Length: 401
Image 1 (cartoon, rainbow, N blue to C red):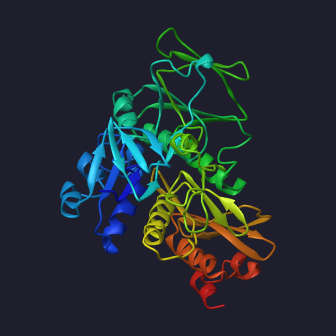
Image 2 (image 1 turned 135 degrees about the horizontal axis):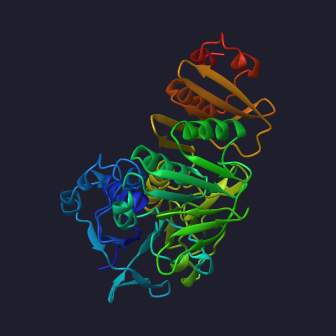
Image 3 (image 1 turned 90 degrees about the horizontal axis):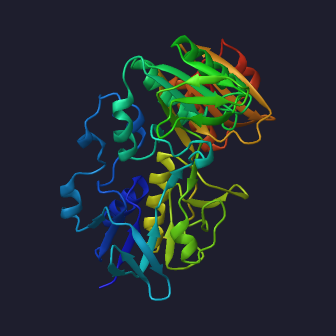
């Protein structure tokens, strides 16, 4: 008996199957995951879980009973080896499963360092899966020397955890400043100082030439000729959408699996959602790497698989936890031409504008600024930049202006 098959048991896949059942779908439903664990949260892996502050069971998005009670068949620890769009079948570990509709929620994969510069040496890690974090856990010994490659949020979060555990941390970023691809110089300055205050050495405009060691990493040679002794390395140089299955199935790709505004791929029976999917947005096309998008887009796709016929309207938001700072981001800052800064007690926020149009806000320990900014952006409203820049302006008053 055919039904709906979902490939990818992460946040998007778990959200999609749960929404299908919540909307009344009572047909056959199968969720396939390459990892042996049921769907779990990824953000805490490199923070609370690594710090020992969150038990494994608390990572799981749903209890095992949920899948049984909702008649969701789990196929875990068994990679999909083939999708046959013509016959509408999926091959999972030798088992052939038929489908009426298929959803791809395959997520993304961390970029790794090339083998010819030492990327395959023991002691070199990426941070994406539970297995990744479990594999590196024993390395976090007080006084150990860690090199973090990459000054994006993944690298900075890893550096923060290591510094809190008493490691000696050096972070190298090839670009002129950390967070250059995703944030304004003001946000980079804020986090550079935060990490320096916690003893992390940040080297910007400095690339990694190669890692040193026979079978296990023991050092690193940087682009400026500097040589560091290291005990292990964490690589945080971005992620790429996992599109191998989609490509083999002949689906159209464009920075991920190309979908229409409702989440349908170039094959009318195949849908995509989450980190792997690119979709129309404000006259262009984007792919969002966030928990919020994984949930919202997957739920929209579930509804459309059942005939809702509604376009997905993304409301981008993100967050990062480093030390005692919670960064909350609303909107997308692409195309900004100025940044307005606000201080509110111990918190602060940076507001991105293109002309007089508010695009995004970065709020550090300032949940009120985040809430106000998010509401304004989602409503398509922009505050008066002069009023926003005036410290005498009460932040909530911007909602009434």
